[in-house]
Length: 193
Image (cartoon, rainbow, N blue to C red; front, top):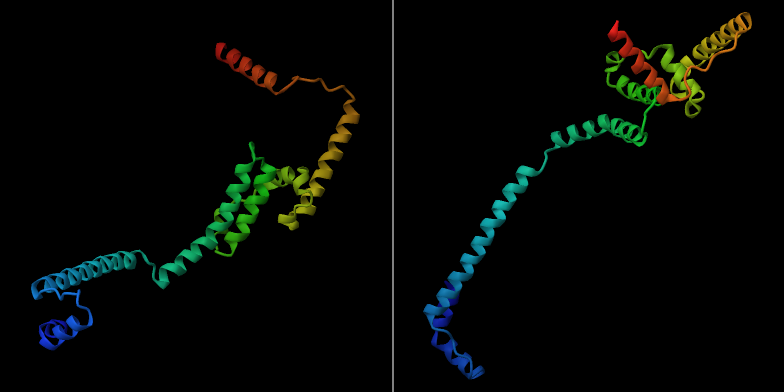
């Protein structure tokens, strides 16, 4: 090695001694030991770096996996929004579910998965049209007129029936709790029969 040869050189010893009299050149054994320790330290560090590099390489995703993740994110993003929206309500109603499901359907139509969903029928659209949050069925504009006409017909039929009967409607239950109490009583009665 070059450094050890320099230390053994008499001219180098004389030069160092004259330049700095209080500096003493370490003996060759101590110097070799220090160099050996430094080299081992660097090699150990390199081994650890290589191990960490292999771990990191196993954790890194290749281009194909990154593309798959991007597609998965695009697929699941509307579901995450839906979950947040539905989770915000204490009691999600049909009028909230229908626009949400329709939005998800439109998203899934792009992926040819729409055949897995059923049409919510007229009742679902009625629930949405009667909810002030979804007045115009913007999420299903082709069903808006059909639902509106159906609702008008039902209201006219109710109006005609009301004028024909002209009997006052009795209030059956004062509140929701009494409604359920009466249902429980009816169930108990039916069990006795």
